[in-house]
Image (cartoon, rainbow, N blue to C red; front, top):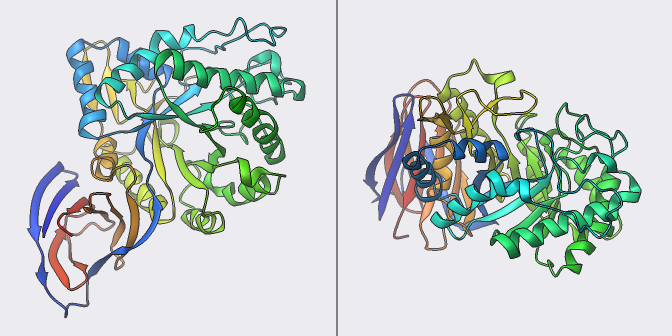
Length: 442
């Protein structure tokens, strides 16, 4: 039985080595134990967001850089999920919507021409590398005329008289992406960050309003266009209030039968215990990490490797507590962390210096790779246990291979023993190191 070891630390990226097991029923200390037969949630995949900003930067690349960029994500890192924004978001070049005529209830003037310029070309090129890419889409704001503040930015609410028209617009968007462009959107969230009033594209929903819109309007609009297999996820905001929001939404009449999952972001911190509670309270619902990034307003002074550690810590905690999938925020940004139409700049795993025509690979790229390269779609999370110095999450792929992702939280190397049943292997993880162990022939 073979172990491939992929190690990352401050000085090296994804260095590969190998080890073997031996029979050992005695060792009790410094163990990391895997239990391949104790399985939990299904893993839907990993990916990032195809924003207009990402598409714009992609359009500025040399062809050779485009080829390298696509290979790094969709071949090397095996991304199989993508997130799309419905109409504009902060990582767009400006506010825009698909329909501006408030009297056009038949949606005859509905147009995806704006998406055709930057977003759809990037998605199509990615699909050439991985045709099995699937997408989740989220709205940041309805058109301004539908809102109480008549503005796509600064919060406001969707007016009740426009619930049906907005639901029909979202359903038409999904239908056109599928039928006209061959882009398969199989999940929607009702609203990105429904609790937040932002200086950029935003719209506020209470839990009851979100459930009402999802159950009585959006689901029906999707079904009318024969999009019955498109899942609807609720919340799509930070973990600190995720339990209260989920309980309020699922208390709405028929919501438990109609809403398929709970989406969340990482910006308020760990709250892994909340995910664990929800995974047990609602075992038939997906938990979907839809957004996380290194915000320049908060973390620009941190090193690239510190930001990578933040990713691994969060992903280990999320998946160890029931999460089914992860989509990072922007796939690609320019050297300044944009463009962003309100100056809300952030880091992306891959960035591009447009003037110098140079790819910038941040350590967060390798952090996500420790999961996405090795944990395949439809894997199961399995039980892992560890002593205090090392964080772990473990998975079993459909081919029987096992994957364990580890992070050493200390500034000293840690010797440990990997145990599976009566087999052990003596291994080491570097100071503040990250490892993926891939175990074959189980």
